Amino acid sequence: MEITNKVFLGIAVVAIIVVLGVVGYSNFAKKNAPVTNSENSSTKFSDATNCTDITKIDFKNTTIIDDQFGALQFNNGFCESKEEPGNKSADWEHIIIDDFTLTPEPSQIVRFIKINSNHLTGSGAWDRLIGFKCERGIININFDQKGLYGIQVQKLGEKQLSLTIGEWAKNDPMCCPSQEKVSIFQWSSKDHIFSLESEKVQKTPP
Image (cartoon, rainbow, N blue to C red):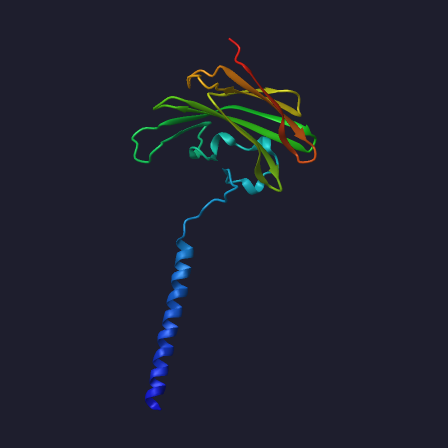
């Protein structure tokens, strides 16, 4: 009986040590796990929880997450990025080239930022037009459109926005689309967003 008790006591001690080890490792793993952004997160702002006036946010000195280029850390509206971490020089140059607001409703202000991304070590350039709003104290994206080789933006009052982007026909060279797509976005008072109302493809003017 004494031997049995000793064996039981030994097993209990081993079990306690194993449990403590598992708990300790779990806490260590959680503490040291990398912080990941939400899949719906598109921006990082140190003052995101204090967003009460979108017109006062300093977009030219913040970090914007881009699906294509990753985290773009702007300084005075300028940023560079690399296609591979080991590259000696930057592959892309990103510049905030436009900044304007629309007020489709008295309580709804949308701040639009246009970013031009130029390929320094190759061909190609992108424009990205992003619309931001303050909602429940944080910054949310209300509008997001990209265009290869640029976007022409035209404000049609406070509730409409026109975007013109190159449209490539089957045999067009990459440099020179023969067509363009004109998209009209209309403010929705129900959903509080700019949604696509109409679009048409036409020949690019000479």
